[in-house]
Length: 108
Image (cartoon, rainbow, N blue to C red; front, side, top):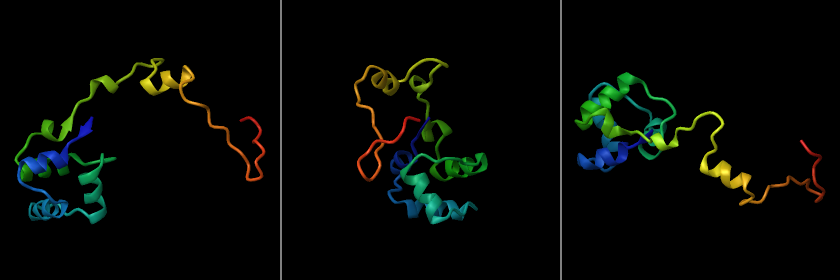
């Protein structure tokens, strides 16, 4: 899933995280500055369903406006992602950890 809060808020005329934070607080959802920053600029690690309800009410949007499915990122067990396939083909050099004195570390 791709988190789409910032664009959804912008489409509703909210351009700053602090504006949204105030509106959410007016509806009973008090969010710390740190958590608001994560919601605004990144992908939230966790979010309560009740909090999503409040966000949707404040932004007058549907859950599908906030969370966009990315089915092409879903892999079956044993399938390689694009990055894994590139690494397996030797496209990226392997990183060899070294000690401070320049000698390599024993194999893991």
